Length: 385
Image 1 (cartoon, one colour):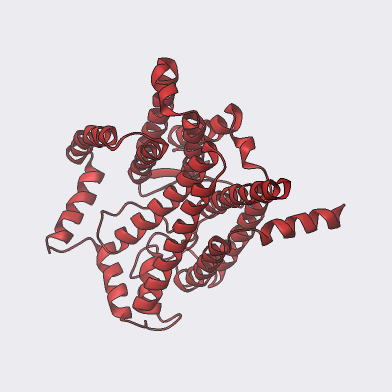
Image 2 (cartoon, rainbow, N blue to C red):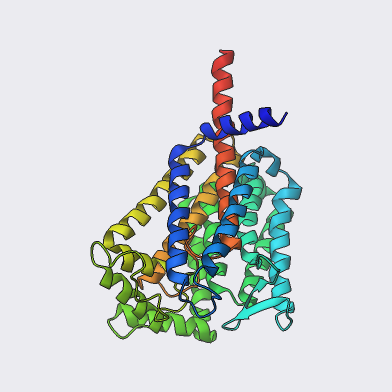
């Protein structure tokens, strides 16, 4: 029995998309190396290998989750309970971080309560939210947007749940991820078939809200003001300045593995949100290009899996998960080089972190599941013919 399951599992992964598997594997390898290089001198590390071993343990758990999810039929997610439960659970946990922010159950950093404490893996509820949002929208939009337009109760329900999630993130406060969830929702609407004209109307309606936030929320005002200074040639914030110094000093080929200066406490949190600056310093322009190419390969294969999916739900899920990984990667890279304001978003598969890494691995597992079922269906169809 065990040998048969092993053979089935091995044959399944032999059918996996090699491009996607290679991109994820190399990105995880780069992540492990860079977490060690960038985190070995961090002031909170009890030893120079603390962050490395912690990251590897979470990566191992992520691989297990990937295998389990990939071997499960993704169509089981296309029902009310799984499609609703993740988003509702994630939203409730986000609300819990706000309510319990003054207790020891929640970790607060820089005024933001985003982590629920556990002994092994601090849980960041937004990571549950982002996958739950994609599954929820894919289930809702699977039957087409016309059916939602005709059902006012369903439209109100969808809008209320998404709005509640975004408001909960704002209260943490977690403005960067709240904006990402908005972008993902709009992107999913477009992918599901909404015309560009109506998408434009939605974006237009959001502009006054963002403008009001600039004037009413000090943190948003500060981040945007720093960004405006940077694009106009004025001095930028300390984080972005050190990040640019690191990338610039790397040149074409880099200073060499382990020779980054920014990891020596000049760049705050070099092993998390600004880890790409250490990549640029140690591996230079070539390392940056390789990293960008790997993300481009991942996104390309993800959308290809979506295009080949055998049903609307699979198409929407694959498109949504690929979109959300692409948004996080682009936002992080743009943030590190000062193209957009600092948003506190990690670089997928590379930045140190537990919840984000495991969730991203689970998302890749879903993509593999969709790809495997599509290929098996085509093989069985040819066999019947």
